[in-house]
Length: 131
Image (tube, rainbow, N blue to C red; front, side, top):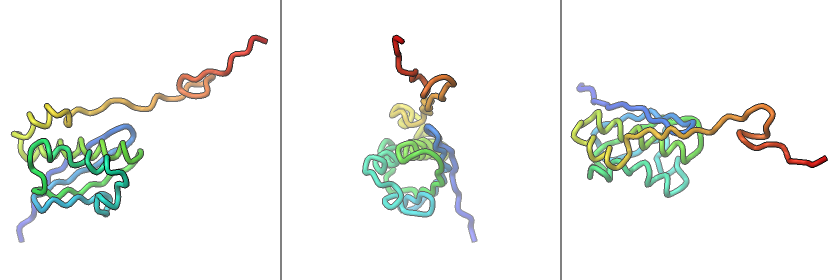
């Protein structure tokens, strides 16, 4: 029995981390054991995770299996998109220029700023009082 070749990549966004496995197939998307339509509630998130395939005209040619943890739906979708783009470049280096031009290989470094002592939040100070 021949073993199938998986292409693996990791994607991160905010506090989310996604492990993405890519293999040639029919275009199914499985996230944490569920179909993408069941796991992601917002239509925007579903479109975000498919963007790398649209950029290189490979829609429906690869099965994607994702394990994602942390953060909310938007951060998880961004992490999955980065992981899919990285896995596609591992699969075929010729996809890299198109994915890079579309901005899918760039890790978004923005994170939530930490709360500082003496303040109510990261920057929020106490209310000013003259007396």
